[in-house]
Amino acid sequence: MADVIFGGIEGGASRSTAVIYNGEGKKLAEAEGLGTNHWMCGMDDCKERIFKLIQECKRKANVPEKEPLTALGLSLSGCEQEATNQELKEGLTRDYPYLSKTYFVCSDTVAPIAAAREKGGIVMITGTGSNALLINPDGSVFQSGGWGHLIGDEGSAYWIAWKAIKIYYDEQDGFKNPPNGLNTTFIWQIIQSYFNIKSRFDILPYLYSNFEKSKLAGLCREVAKGAESGDPLCQWLFNEAGILIARFILALAAKCDKDVLDQEGGLPIVCVGSVWKSWKYLEPGFSHELQTNTSKIILKQLSLLRLMVKVATGAVYLGAKAISYNLPRKYSDNYHVFYHYVRKELAH
Image 1 (cartoon, one colour):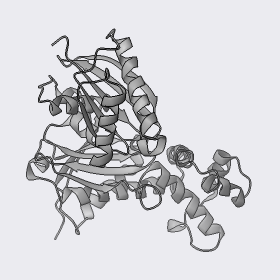
Image 2: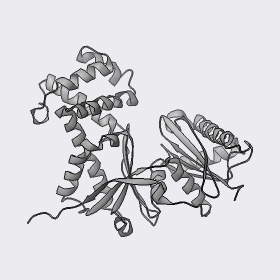
Image 3: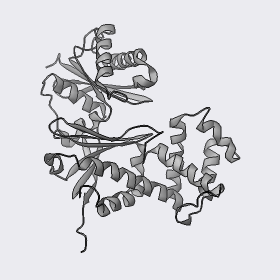
Image 4: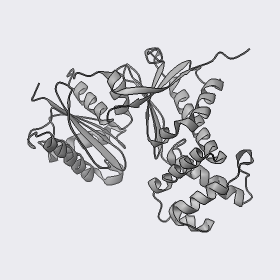
């Protein structure tokens, strides 16, 4: 098995991570690089970035650069459509013949589940944007969210930042009062400081002519600091985000196979993204939404999992599975449970 080498890449819009493993399930090297969403960087740049990431891993592991991987799993943002996934595979085979013998391409939401559970589950991404995906044991896949900031991204860093700005501007316009009569003084201070602006009009370039989603989402870090310092409105924003995240999970739980729901600890949710760092302030809204929900499936039990390995490890597993290779692994070493929900019996 010494000559068997598997690669995996987890690629986002802004950053990507690659790992390579030997046939005994041991990680040999990892590397980080630019984003590999082909809709954003173009198909040619995407292929070149994938090539450079794997070549860097090979160099670190003392693997000859012209020795192709046995299989390369690619779990990339923007790879939701089979037609463009096939185009990517064909392009890599043609342009980089020494990169890998075979390829498996899928969305960036698939690898986190593959790294944690063999029987499937849900991945809930709440980073710059938001997306939720369910994979059942039979391979069926269901999505909720993931449509970008114009019509979605609820509960994400972008949504929290946008909501903070919206609440203040609505108040100043006399259009709508802040929720629960909360004070907006602190929110306006962090908006001014983060964007280096003085008046409300100064924010317009950041929203339109010079818009960068990641820049706007970065305000969420300041809101998180505000929640830590005790600002009620900042805490309210994360509470609302928790409610929305729970709704994504409830939407997908209704489509879960019984074997997924009946796993030890209940429905497994692999949590990815920086917003989860503020779990303390997400949890009240999250658990309340699950407990009081009556419109969808009554979810009795779930576990939130945080990966202890690179998400790209899941892409390695997927690449090995695609060629029916039984790569040694121990799932329980790959994650830890940071929250276990059990529904309380409601009083009649």
